[in-house]
Every structure is written in structure tokens, then in C-alpha cells.
Image (cartoon, rainbow, N blue to C red; front, side):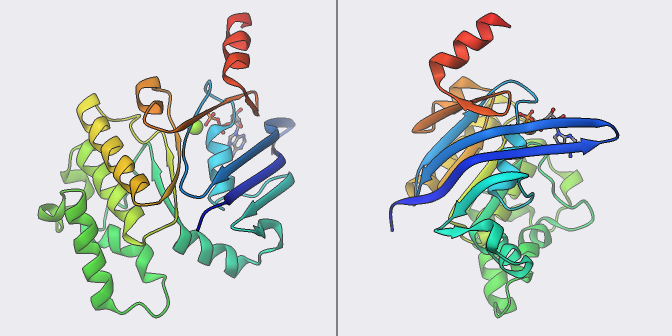
Length: 236
Ligand SMILES: Nc1ncnc2c1ncn2[C@@H]1O[C@H](COP(=O)(O)OP(=O)(O)O)[C@@H](O)[C@H]1O
Ligand SMILES: [Mg+2]
């Protein structure tokens, strides 16, 4: 299948804390095609993580319209949203977000346990395969704290890909890694992209952004064109 997978029109997000209103997103327009690999960059606080959270159905917008796979997200009920998030979307975070008191294998298996009708034997097989894929099968029974940062992120990638999501969202996945481990994670994302996954990756690093086939830039809660961004930054 090809065509549009993510369509975002005039998306806004306002956070209200005490007496302060933060306009994290101020009218984002963005269309992503199925199978595209998009890198998002922009200065700290410009709304990248907020946008990724909304795309991944972890958060809801204040205004605007978000259509995922042809369905308007605002019209989905709680159960639909949870199911889509669990089956269609894989997340990779800067800080790995593994659960400390679960083993590597249990961490990877956890999202699969929410899949109704998936037998335990199939879950175990998927866990094994995805850990082999990231070269971490030999650490199945370890706990996250017993692994290096690079190894933890590889486990997080295995967790994200175990459920064969159609969309992978990565929020500064290399932010806490040295360049060698960062490259290893980039290589995995590249392979997943070649197998057809749609990838949105936030990164500060232009070398990593260059892995994507399309680069978009955010500034002050809006998507701006590349030239515009350079101009805006020159004015700051
Ligand atoms: N849960 C929240 N509550 C209040 N303000 C928030 C929250 N999350 C993000 N923000 C604010 O929204 C803006 C955008 O944040 P974020 O999307 O995390 O930016 P980025 O990922 O580009 O650094 C920032 O000003 C941030 O402080
Ligand atoms: Mg962020």
C-alpha cells in the first residue's frame, strides 16, 4: 500500500500549567506518505517531542485535524486508540525507557502481551527474533541496568519492532549514545525503512538526519522550510 499515512492540518497544542499557557504547537501542517523516512529537527523547546507524541497517539492536540491511515483520530474511541498505538506504532526514546525490574526479554515481550489472541509461544518467538535482529539475544535474561547505553537502546529498538509496527517514531534515539552506538541504531532504522516502515525521527545531529529521505524543520511550534529556518536562526 502506498499513499498518505499521516495527515496533519493546522495542529495546535497548548499546555496549561499554573497561570502559564505554553503554545507548544501553533499550526502544524504535515503530510507523510507510507514508507517515508522523515527526520525532524529544530531548537530545543520548539515542539518536536509534542508533535511526535501526538502522531503516536500518546497525547491529544488542542486543535486542528490529525488523520492517521485515513481515519480522523479525534473520532476514535479510547479502545481504538490503544489498539492502534499497540499494533501500528513503535516508539524509541532518547532515554531508552526500559522497565528496570523486567528482564530484556520481558521488556520486549510486554507490548505483545496486550495483543489479544497472540499465543505465548508466538510472543516468545517474536521476542527471540527481534532480539537476534539487534544482536542482543545473548542478553535475554539480563536487566537493563546491567547493559550499556548502546545495548539498552538496541533492546528498545527490539521492543519497538517486535510487534511489526507500520510506523516507527524515534525521539532523539541517538541522543544518549556515542557515535558508534548511534550509527548502529541508525543502521537498524535504515533496514526497517527498507522493509517498508514509515519512520519519523527527531534528531539534532545533521549527520543522522541525512539518513532520512526527507528533512523537516520545526521552529516555535511550526514546520518551516529549510531556508526559512536558517534565516530565523540567523536572526536570533
Ligand atoms: N507536559 C507539559 N506541560 C507543560 N509544558 C510542556 C509539556 N510538554 C512540553 N511542554 C512545553 O512545550 C514546549 C515544546 O516542548 P517539546 O515538544 O518537548 O519540545 P522539543 O522536543 O522540541 O524540545 C516547551 O516549551 C515545553 O516546555
Ligand atoms: Mg524533545
